[in-house]
Length: 322
Ligand SMILES: C[S@@+](CC[C@H](N)C(=O)[O-])C[C@H]1O[C@@H](n2cnc3c(N)ncnc32)[C@H](O)[C@@H]1O
Image (cartoon, rainbow, N blue to C red; front, side, top):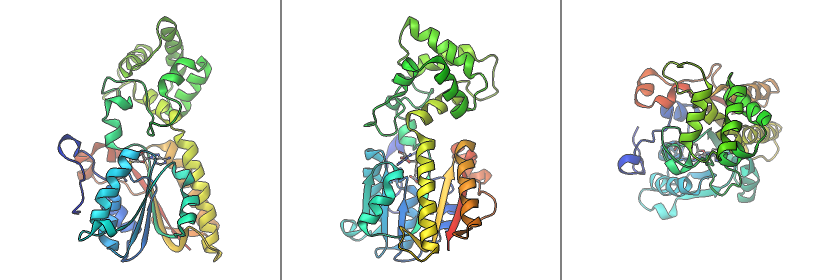
């Protein structure tokens, strides 16, 4: 698949590849002139592919909590939607948490024919050492996807009680050694505050016995702190709740930000995200508000996983609004 405005970045940043690109386009089934709402615009990879299908008469709403990503996405998507005159493309860029998106769509008077949420973080975020999202890079212990948010991972690690830290690491990282890790963190911060990714990774390693194959022992703790800092599961729950209300309304013929017949796709990257998505979609179809587009989650083929290892854990689920 090609896209004139995509990839939007140059040089070393050209690492972003939209996950399950063909599968998303097939599921969302874009038609000329339709309205696409991208809850997680990222770098606009998926949106750009949809833009090519809906053409200049189509409308795209891009939402992201990261202003830098949103700006990049807007430029490339406008170009893909309306290559002759990108300035005239109907692209709305909305910065914020997707949990607040439905209210903004109502203000715009838009009803979506396609909705996508591609959860988690973008390559620009995880590969930026200053974000502190990865133990692969030395950096400050930040982890915010939206740098204007108030709480960083540094604050959590240095202020939460040992018990709360253990709970977060267990619940959001599904880490069996959570208590040992929390105890080591508390001991270490008494010596000196934990302020960098390197130090956090080193402390976790000291608490986790033995190697874990090719998986870095710090993986689960980093995931847990990132989920907590960004309240990722709380936002997902809120989005699912609002989608449920919208699907119910459209099934009942009431005005809704999700149009009747709309296709809704959600890509998750770990079981903590996939479980609520699976549960919500089965509730919606059980209530007669929509029909599952695929009975099983759609996963990446081997060829995609080779070129984009993050695709290995991606699961796409979808529903068509009644
Ligand atoms: C996996 S990337 C999306 C990539 C995008 N589909 C593409 O093709 O370029 C996820 C994006 O969602 C954003 N994000 C994560 N959680 C969010 C939330 N609760 N509200 C708004 N944006 C969010 C992140 O900032 C990131 O840019």
